[in-house]
Length: 157
Ligand SMILES: C[S@@+](CC[C@H](N)C(=O)[O-])C[C@H]1O[C@@H](n2cnc3c(N)ncnc32)[C@H](O)[C@@H]1O
Image (cartoon, rainbow, N blue to C red; front, side):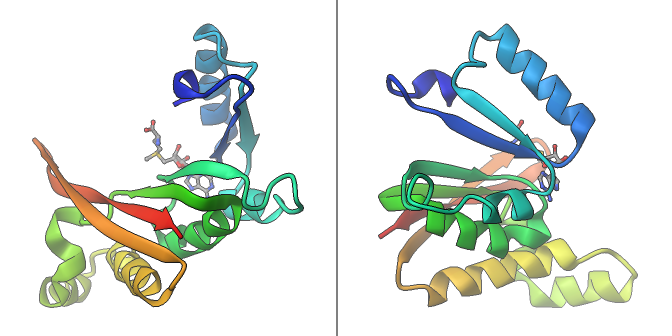
């Protein structure tokens, strides 16, 4: 992503864990991209909310969401605020082997004591995307040896 930036472009990335952020910073520096990538350490929901004002709001071309799934609606709302009209927001890991569309299986997992909050969060995000007239979304499925998943491609109108 950083290599694809136009002259003068910047990429801001968010990481909760300090150690992981440190590894990211090292890799970014090793790739010679430190001049255009900023790593913000802390909960992304707070860091994003702090990005206010004309220099931030409606200025980004693209956002990629791939953090704590339960917060995806919050991330989406913040990214909608920061991304310009015509920009794109991608959200990863939203099909979850079809569980997002399978309420009966989710209920069975829950009854068996399994964690289902990430599945419910997937549904919550779909409902939000459907309700927001400023966003147009589609789901792109993916499959690999671990099963099938996918990402939402969201156009900021
Ligand atoms: C699936 S990984 C991201 C992988 C990355 N997109 C990539 O392709 O290499 C999720 C990351 O989000 C971080 N994370 C989890 N909760 C977060 C939060 N509330 N704010 C910021 N980062 C968070 C985790 O520490 C983890 O490094």
